[in-house]
Length: 222
Image (cartoon, rainbow, N blue to C red; front, side):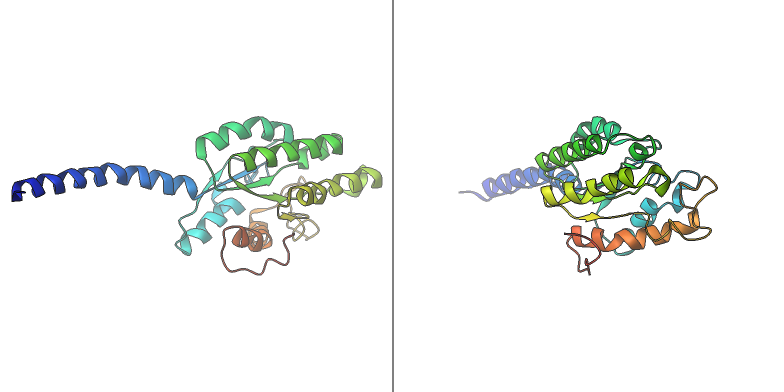
């Protein structure tokens, strides 16, 4: 075989490698996406979005030089039925490796049946699982003025859904700020900008464990 033949062969394989590089990069990018599907709590309602807990999560991952891309798909006023309706498109468009579901608060504030909340969350987990995305569920709770029967039934939904699906969950996402003086905006529902770092710290062990980083995930179950 001539030297010219080997040159042409090398050029051919070099071209193939160049064509494969964009494909490999796209595959890596898709595999490293984390989608946050939430309501106004995660959409940074009433504050600068740059100070919201989701952006703080992006900043922390960037500081650690993590390849994870965080997509904030949160919408103020979103319910679990709305999140369920949007999820198929989000899964198809972003092909996330991880999904954080922070929904249910608006269902509770509107007095929706806990059974409907459970069904919607279960369907979201099933859709994510079918798409190959790992789910972290962030729980919510209702204030006592909704009545003991309703608040207990509402709070029980999250651990029941998580246990049945075998996914990690945080019992009450707003726990570190809900009763802290000055941590909530004047509406008494949405955390202030100053409270956002506490929300990140609360969820961080779960996120770190989900991403496969070293973590003390005792505060995240199972």
